[in-house]
Length: 123
Image (cartoon, rainbow, N blue to C red; front, top):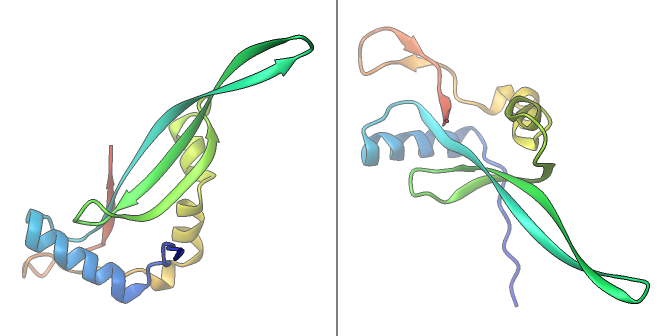
């Protein structure tokens, strides 16, 4: 069995993703699309002489490239947290803050002469 893992995007990979977003979706300067989903897990537990089912939720945050393939995944947050709290505690947020130098620098937007930063789309 071979193990697969996500590699951490670098400057070159982000630029490649942005080019592919432009080619496929005609959307400039996009380094990825972010969304989250909450999953409910049912756990069977034995308590003394009977069994009970306990429900709890786990949040998955992900960023995909232009082909809907994950480039970042973050799990483990609880369903009760706000979107802002989840994002500010995520590995993605800390990566973006700590690795600002690996992100592409703003460039001219469609030959307009106006510089525009690269960004991650989200809802």
